Image: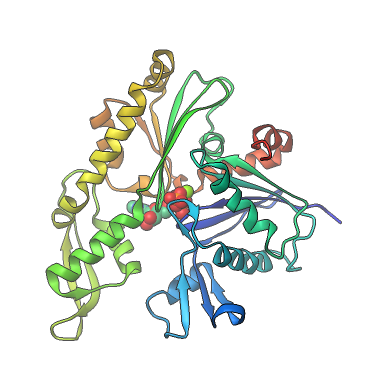
Length: 337
Ligand SMILES: Nc1ncnc2c1ncn2[C@@H]1O[C@H](COP(=O)(O)OP(=O)(O)OP(=O)(O)O)[C@@H](O)[C@H]1O
Ligand SMILES: [Mg+2]
């Protein structure tokens, strides 16, 4: 039997899976749709398909997001989701004997990190081994930072529910902070604002699409139309939303982000921060694509900023690189607890 090796980035927003020699084989929303209760509970859809059912499904179907703030919040849903995914990525539902490497937030404690291990071990997969690698290490490889050579780099991964600020130097992670903020917060703010201000109902998915068009880290003049339901007339209609309306709801988050980055820089030894200054801060994660965020971070921290068009994939492609060179993957794998 050929032994398969998989890398997984369990993001709060989406799960990315890499299979050795095949590359990224899955990138799906971290969502599960189930029917029934207790022992009769079964998955009927997962990923993007389940996300489409969100806010649209009948009461008999429940659509859940098993992760919150980068961690496993509902273990049984997460295991069910993983089993469903595993069945899709392999002809045989059981990935018996496969090896897994999972990217985990560096700032998590052992229990929080081990929850990811449980997802694979307690499901149907029957793995040969499950090892964990810190996400900032994966990000560094994904961003093509030479971990062994760099005198210091800062990576800021801004995802769906987390911001992970990490400093890399001396071949490893010097510091990494996981903050409970990210793109999901903006979606909810936009949805609530439109509901209150205009008596207009949009779903979370529409709010996310709207966000991509009009959210900006600096004040700007953008507009976008959304389709939703007018609660007063009860009729579906279009509404035009301006970025100036949204900006005041979210500007504090950007200010917080810059404060946190500055705080970590201030606590970084001078020879490392000099190197970060020289190389520029790396922004990655899907929410690093927020309009003008790079400029905002550069202006507020007085640092150069690097962005990437692969922002949602730097963790998984770095993890992929490591498992293609498996000695490296084992070098960076966390010690077994
Ligand atoms: N063009 C864009 N503009 C703004 N935000 C975007 C854009 N494209 C994607 N996003 C946001 O990026 C987020 C998803 O990014 P990513 O895949 O890095 O998160 P994740 O890894 O699932 O979450 P986390 O790392 O926080 O656990 C979502 O909130 C999404 O709305
Ligand atoms: Mg992520």
